[in-house]
Length: 222
Ligand code: DC
Image (cartoon, rainbow, N blue to C red; front, top):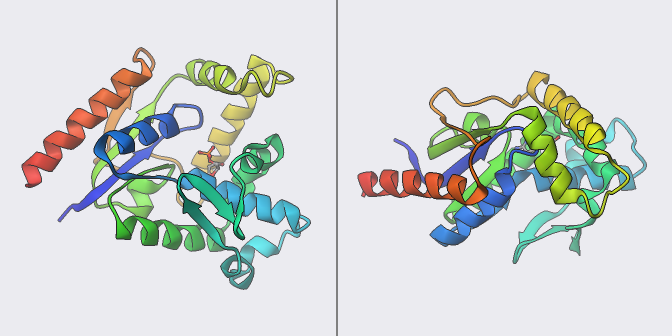
């Protein structure tokens, strides 16, 4: 039986998952869970702990990390880290951290626990394949590399004016390569994912399309 009350939204970097997932959660009055933020929070903790390579393999180190969401903020050890987890340094190191088995086990458990308590829209890379393979709706968003790089550039352009569009495109491709070729929970669509190519769609059109599909499936289940 499908798991009700979980919508999985997966896809590569810069495809617009988080904006779409957040808006969709708001429309449905469900909780939005940004799983990328949890990987970023562990990455931040690791950088702050001095980048010791064995740390992310240690369950004991991971279990003492309090990663939590409260009122839309991401907390690490009780501290709001919304901005700190978006730094270029965290972004550059997140693929290394998210390829570690112990990290994935720790964060998959955390994500299942949070989403087990309330209806959730989750976005990430492995939500439909690993975290909630029985979610009642598993969306896989795609867009051409150049389209995604431009979206990201517009999104961060103001704060990171030192990064050109070309550099963003290069970094984004490299991150996708690492995320989709790693051994554990690689970025890929679930076999029964509902795929949506977003190249020629506005954000509002993407949200509308997923909402319509979600409501259709919810009413079928009722
Ligand atoms: O979506 P994002 O850019 O915030 O993700 C940060 C990193 O975490 C990225 O390298 C992919 C990884 N990630 C993952 O491996 N699994 C997820 N469910 C979400 C993100």
